[in-house]
Amino acid sequence: MPELSVSAGLFAAAFYTLAWILQLQRLRSGGNTRALVLFCGLVAVLAHAVSAYEIVRAPLGYRFGITQISTLIALAISVLVLGSSFRKPLDNLFLGLFPLAVTTILLSLTIGSSFPSTSLGPGSGSHVLLSVLAYGFISIAALQAIFLSYQNHRLKHGHAGGLLTKLPPLQDMETFLLELLWAGETLLSLAIIAGVFFIDDVWSMDGIIHKSFFTVLAWLLFAVLLWGHHRLGWRGTTMTRGTLTGFVLLVTGFYGSKFVLEYVLN
Image 1: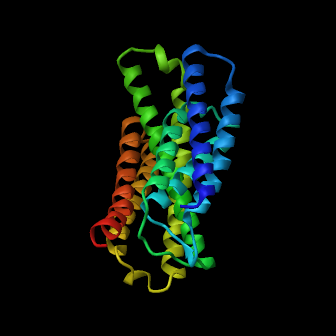
Image 2: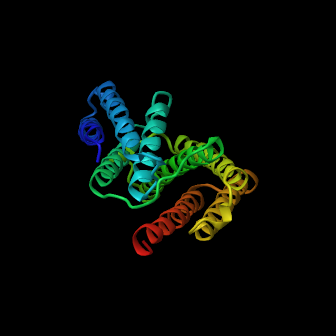
């Protein structure tokens, strides 16, 4: 394990944790520490990027085992949420995001991988980048769906206080969920196209049938959700449950195939 990846990873984990504590205190007391939370998050993301790069890099290419790709996806999610938080009130997503980032960093530093390294050309590199971004957007959408489901539940049962007062209006929450789904579905579509056209012998790769089956199911589900919202006015529970189901399908396809290849068959 490169020394730089360890030191940068621990540094990132410390600042993610500090940002999480500050955001939790801000949520409870309403203090004016938003700028400090964003600063700590930005420092954490920069250190996370250094750690992730050092962990993924291999002498003959790049290694994309479960822990390595997980920390890359967590990094993408952190960058996307931090960037979006400057124009949208997304600070409460930090409460779920930062612990996830810390977990993936620590796992990547402590669990090795025997997954073979892969050399990346422009085509395969674009597939990896698009896939990581798609998983990032869809993961944020799943987290947003959890908050939206909580918000709906509290409102239906007449509980308008507590955390609910800290969340954006319901309509804004639903609008942001749709934006995330559109972005995730578009990137997922491009990732699938890049994989089919730019990766040689893609259908002969181990685990690709299992991964492709669940990925296509998730893609179809997200497409139906977006069509249903546009044409039939689907909202609320239908959208949140559909988003979470699609996320579970993606996770099952991606991590299921990788776990079998990396830890069962190896």
